[in-house]
Image 1 (tube, rainbow, N blue to C red):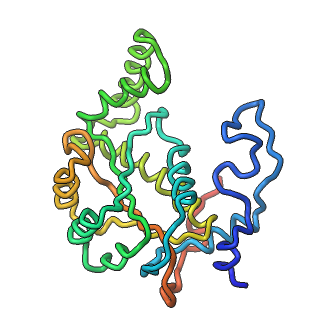
Image 2 (image 1 turned 90 degrees about the vertical axis):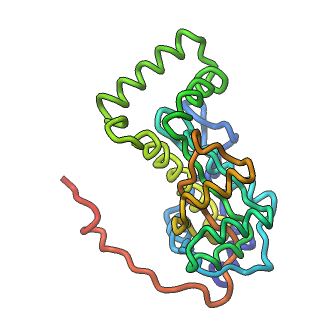
Length: 252
């Protein structure tokens, strides 16, 4: 049995909250009944590759796609603001339009079982979003929310220089979306699901497509990356190269 077949038979611990006694397990009260082995992690990392061609006939189960979306939902974000959203593009016409807005080399990726479009907040969209997060999601009262906003703005302007460039806040939000992207890709590998992150597209064209379907307002949200998810077609893998560890990491 090869690695792909082994994953397909679920011979591993579920990703993201593996072995936890509860999906809400966190903090001092959390006890882990199992731990994921180094071998298991390495197998998932080696399994993951940028899948160039997907099997049209193999679809991800509803349970698995929900798990991958949960991986994104539980991903960390700066200040816990979750400055991004995901559009699951399953409508045939929507996918066709997204495909047309992408580079030709990425056309085969749209044969994947699922296409996710990650969007990130713009500067104008973030202020309202932050208020929603603080008041509605985190339950802060008006005074606490105002104080937290003031503290964030001081950090953003003085320390992290987010406002030094016109799109600085959007780029900061996009970086948070990429953290969620990484969580989804690793969780997918744990489930034996292939993936390919897609940046080869025209942002202007994709914005126009998403707005035509009333999925975004460009003043508040912009697409930053897409993710194809599915199962590799035969012969779709290619050798990959990586720099040596001592070139990547500096110990001091």
